[in-house]
Length: 521
Image (tube, rainbow, N blue to C red; front, side, top):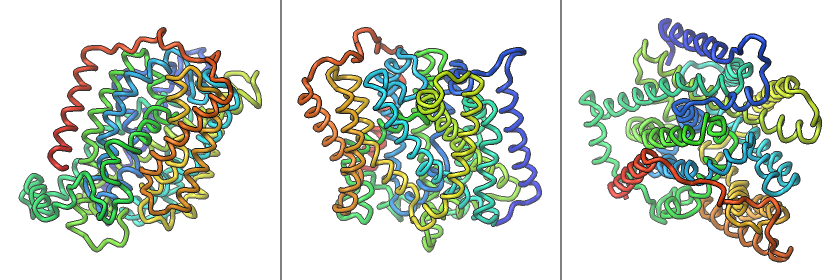
């Protein structure tokens, strides 16, 4: 598959236009020097539509488009639980967690942990997140993006890696979060348009030109097993999605960690004009999440019918892109790169934020000027990207389903993170030592179970490790005297009341999900 001259022109205009827009929205008033709040929190000025769009643009990247399409190819619609259950999780975050974070006036998640526990917890978790974001998330997005570019254009993987790294850093490094969040509006529009186009063409191909609805009906009739949302124990991919665990078990822990306690995601809500604005943005994002399986799962399911002989599941989405006619392929290719670039830009900005605020500003140079911190943030963003480019291929080159790789190793950290935050929120006696025990136990127990109980589904492992971390935290706290901590959160001083529109939108999300699961149980 090759891009036509028109496709290349279209894609080039997208790249130039995005950089120009990023520079324009990043401009400062004459005489104003960009400070850390401007760079890392967009001056706390983001409106709801920018928050909602940016949440989705940051979330949906190569790991979802390529990785989840690959899982759709191999498993089917069941992988959509990651998207649909996330919609409910977002609403929980907006109602119960955001009010606490915004009332505390924090910039980073580790900063909150120091306020609630102590500096040791802050530093340990900052290092955890920096390692996770750089070695797992950033490398995965780059690698899958380079694979897609290679499949579509034939460009060598190393050149694809370098292009994505340079382009992403180039448009985001000057303006920081403001440049990323406001350009994400364009990215999301392109993402949705391009994704729906690929899905339509794939379904239309199944129906031999009779339309997408006919193609969907044919899929339902010919491969009904691909529509099972809850997998039975004898299913070959049960280990990836173990039955009811996706509704009542470890998937909740994964979602709460990703959407609630993840700097990469939560930073957008922290940059909101107000709590109400942040909650409106989260409700907007929840509805976009309901739409995402059509874009990131359905093409892979269609590929299982159209090209079942694929050597690797992650080839499914690039293969379906070959159906896009010349002239439109440039827009679809731009949509894919938009998703990748927005996630890369968001990720390096969050890495820079945590390093600058929690490591550099806390340990190395507490008295550094605002200007110097912004400069350090930009240097760290570039450095993280260079590291990710170097290690992407050795780390991910032989892994068949990259999305499962991401979930597997993120799950080492996730149970401890959720334990620390939930106990910190809702148990005034939870101590700093118990938080450290939970953080370390999460990694150690996960690694031991991964090594010595390989048959345990990883979502079940996440749930088991989470329960163990909570138990250990309670035991350590009780052994230390079980007294109210001086930094405990006073929930009586925080309002969890939400607007009528937020409540109505939340009810709509729940009803849609009930209907979806009832249809394809």
